[in-house]
Image 1 (cartoon, rainbow, N blue to C red):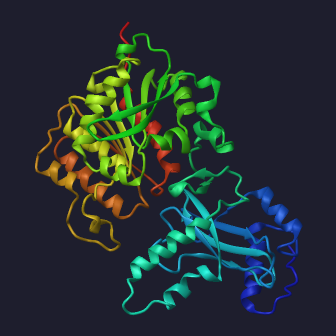
Image 2 (image 1 turned 135 degrees about the vertical axis):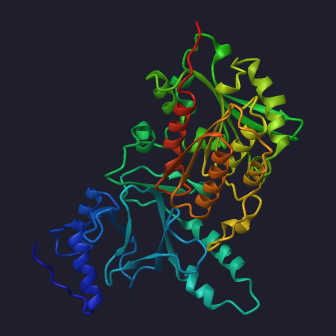
Length: 454
């Protein structure tokens, strides 16, 4: 390929031009031209290339087109990139794309494992929101950590999905939209294809999901009213026998990443038995933290109030071997607690990225090397809970760092106490994009031996 003429004088600009042309495999000499951007749109972002120095990793190239043009016309001074469990959220200097001078092109690269999966978003920032300026303005008596968190939380309000990513954006934390990265060597998440292509599709409004219901649960024990989605999936020969699956953070699986079509497909194909699913709304952050941090009241309310209320209309099994509690993060902690505390009711646990540091948040701080453990792990080690017939499916991401460590601690404790636990790690972070496939894998594992007795 013939090298383009470099019109901008410094050596860094020349290198960036050359690098971009090589990576994008562009035949267009003018980087940033309409034709060049058209080529990038056809390829879809981020661009994925082999790493010649490390065959186990790939090079991802992120690009952003400044709608206001070059630096002489645009107010944008930085384009921060927030990649799940890659970007450090605790600094005033998170990674930012770099502008190619006198163009509308912003550019950044990342080296990552071939088997990684994750989500990301871009954050164009004006002079007001440049992190280094905030850091310079700190006084000696200021709380730097508090100020940084304030800056970051305000900064991400302007986060956007990548407009040139071919995957349709999906909702993530704080209801912001994220773009997805599925690398070429990964197993395809084909079950979620319908959602990925059109996430605005409302499953609850689709007539084919007539078995999805929405009820309200007024709990006298908890003193709160909340939504619960019910899904009687598949035809059960005996509804009194059908498995019961309780999904925590039900609003995520009913609205942000709707699971109904995937459950239906897996049931129709015979990978899952006909079952009753209860998706329990978390209400809000404060209520979620109260309910899902090993709260006996929450689980007593589930057993004494919610399940009897649902069973009046939707019969299901009382067999603990066919009753699953499933959750992620705080929900993973809560699901594990429920199974350990009440194995005679909740005989199967599906825990993903469980927050087993709780209540000692020091365990989550970067660089922590102490032997301290979370409360639930200590309970297992002290033999507060006995293995019995409890069956556990546990997952965590390799890029969840301290959270990976506390999951390792709990898994070791469970294994040493002879609990029946299957432990998996995925190459990714604290990410619904990773959890969604693991959720189906866990359900299939926990229900693999179930059969209706005619």
